[in-house]
Picture 1: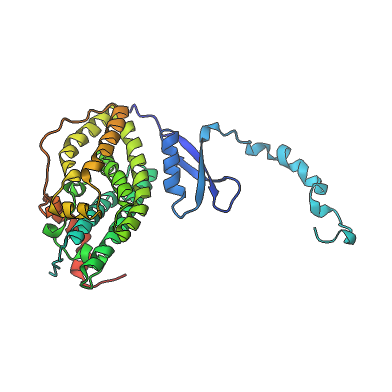
Picture 2: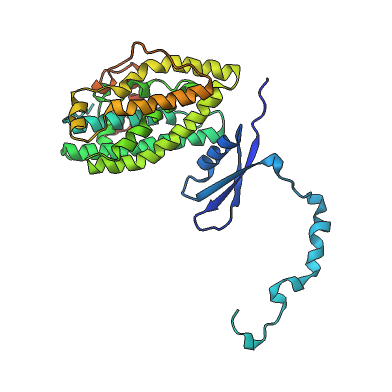
Length: 95
Length: 256
């Protein structure tokens, strides 16, 4: 076999109502143009999309699940970062 | 076995030629469902097939109305035999390999795109509306098949060998795209359908551009197949219809 495996691409779709592109899934394709077409055929079959991004999966740097304690645990002791932490004086009214 | 005889006025015949080509080509593409080399392409080919099926339905429904004998799109699709089908021969050839399938979509959509673009200006408002929808679909079919043609032609030794074989097999069937008979002349004079001679330069330019990029040779002009538009078909159409029409033939009037 001289064939190279087909690269993987992550697909992001901006919906009719959404402001930002959201991750929809992934496709296999030989290059960017074919990845765009595969994404169109796989993820916009029901009129979901107005815009598509495809990104080589290999270009994504992901956090290590083993690091989750050091990355995310410290925030659990900082409830004051949530707006619900604060009492709003009644004079302020509805926000 | 019930077989209907359609009263083929020029407009009905022209609509059947377009509809039958869409339906038969759609069926060939649908044969890939579950068999394509990868899931992405399985979906892509099924999407193409569904677009063509939608075009066929709109054209059959209009043809049935114009005929005015109370028939439906299903009657026209399921109750005619091979000699009554008016599709281009290129659409009925067996599905072949992936290169053959892609090249057939390319050669047909390189024609369909400018054809529907021109038909948007038809004096027949109903046909113009069908064309307005079909034009966008054909643009994508051309883009998808064109990009694949480039990758197959300028790809591996095997993909190139296969697409070259597909060109040899399909090229003699491209002549039917530009035929002009009395029926066509009547509709051309009425402004219902565009002149094939006006579509040809766009088709030639698209083929030259994509073949050039794909490093594929355009075959020399030679002998061309004909007959499909008048009901003279290859031996393959009867087998296709036997599968496609089976349920309606075995259980007349069956519905979902």
